[in-house]
Image (cartoon, rainbow, N blue to C red):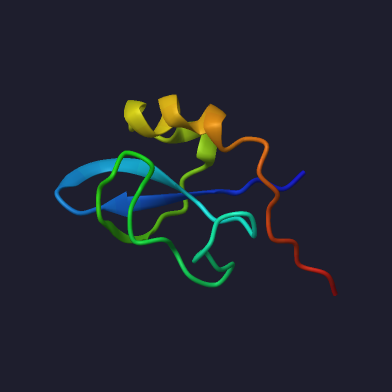
Length: 76
């Protein structure tokens, strides 16, 4: 199962955060990270951390609002 969430790092904070990319959200693309995390921090880049290992509690608390969104899918 695919998820619309991606783990990222954010400016000014050493912990991991979440962003959402979904065809249901205008301005998001599968090949580009959104400018801000779910908690509002500026995104600095992707991280290899698993979504389940994200450290930002504000990002985690906001995930239920986005869980039902569709995600981009790669087909070969």
